[in-house]
Image (tube, rainbow, N blue to C red):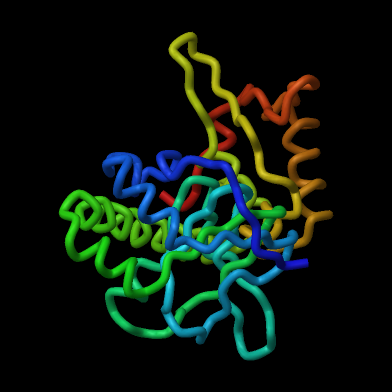
Length: 229
């Protein structure tokens, strides 16, 4: 059930806002409406008016597009702490994508007037938004390259490779891997296919599951490359 909530979370956890003075943050907090969304519920729908800037206070969102047959295509992930909606506010155009809660999430909505005032009159915010937009363009290009890979195995492999952390001791680890359901959405395949592919990587000795954590050790990095590059 979607419901308005009161939360005790500092806006300083939002990178876009963290450098603002406490007085400004307190004023913003009074203008933001916080709403709890259950998993898989639409937070924003394609075609909606761009009338707010949103902040992910808790949880995680997926940005998806929907074709004429009602089929969803994953475009991006918005983790806790991040914001979305800046481009639509600036351009004045309607929402170009649908945003869905991938887990139960608490989202802050800052109205158009207050959001534009913040963006246009705060140079540090304007600069951060330009940086975010550059990242969005780069991520969109990566996603297009991912969708052009011909097989589900290649797409899942690339998603895993993009999440590898390499440590100074030479160890490579995939930490905090999204759920198989989320990876399936990203790779435009089924959850069962993702489970089968990751299982095959383990059997082939490419990955080794850490039994105590939601992570994998990469044992054969040369066989787990990002094919979008």
